Length: 232
Image 1 (cartoon, rainbow, N blue to C red):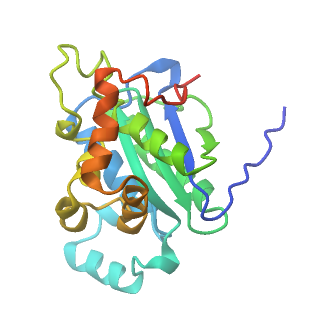
Image 2: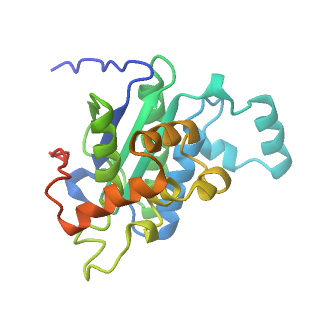
Image 3: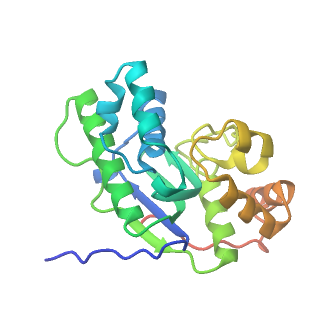
C-alpha cells in the first residue's frame, strides 16, 4: 500500500508526535535526552553535513562550518513553540518555515537519532513506531491547549511522576520553564522560537497567566478542558 505524501502549510501550527516501536523506551538516560534535543536544534535548520559528521569535526572546523552555514531565518526549516520528551515518546508543536520544512526536519531528526541509539545500544532496525503522527492545530485556543498538554505530559505521567511531587517547571526535558520565565527564554533557550512563544503568551496575557492556565489543569479545573491528543 502506497503511503500518501504529507502536506504541511507554511506558518500553520502542528502537533507532531511519535513513540518507540512496540512502545519501547527511546530515552534511557540523561545523555539520550540531551542528544535528541541537540539533534532537534541542529536539524531545525538546513544542513550540508549530518549531525554525526558535525560532531566529528574539530572545534575550529565546526566554527568554520557554522560561519559558512549561518543559522538564520532563511535556513530555518521549522519554528518551535513547545516540546516534551517522555521515556518512550515525544511531542512537538511547531510551524513550518518553508515548504517541506517539517518533512525534511523530521526525516533527518529520526534517522540521526536512530543511528545514534542503535550504535550505542547495539541494536538494528527502526526505533520509532512507523511514521510520526501529525495534526494541524486549528485555532489560537487549540494552540494553547496543545502546548499545555505537551507541558503537562511529564507531571501527569505515572512513568515520570510516580509520587506526584514533580512540578512542571522542574522537568528538564520540556519547554515549559521557558514559557513561564521570559529571562530563560531569551538567554538559555536553544530550540524554541522566542517570537512564537511570545505570540502564544500574548493570547493569554503573559507568562503568569499562562502558568495559571497550565497548572489549573493539575487541580482538575473542569473549566479548562483539553483536547484528547493522546497517542493512538
